[in-house]
Picture 1: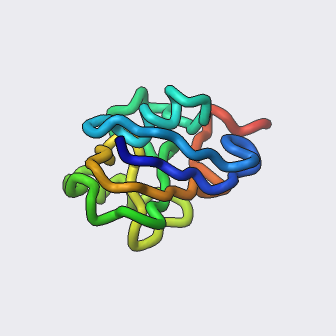
Picture 2: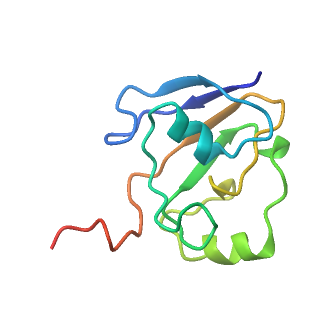
Amino acid sequence: MPRLTVLPHPECAPGGAVIDAASGTSICDVLLEHGVEIQHACGKVGACTTCHVVVREGFASLNEASEAEEDMLDRAWGVEQHSRLSCQAIVADTELSVEIPRYSLNHAKEKL
């Protein structure tokens, strides 16, 4: 079972996390199943950018991003070369390291 390392994030994982991840599962589902409360405003269907992550290690092992996912990532805050929507990125058999960006475009969560 591959290991998923989550780099520290002030809200979702203040101390970071190391998780055993089941192959064939989305990064988002792995995070949520292990108490890392990553946002997923669209219900994990790839229709928003709130679950955006930057894959620091193991990017090449993930399934290929669809054109729709790439179009959606164009709207995300802080996109990098190895950015993915965690709800669309499927864990294979390689260890991964992910960073959850500090900011997300989630108007439903913003305080007025």
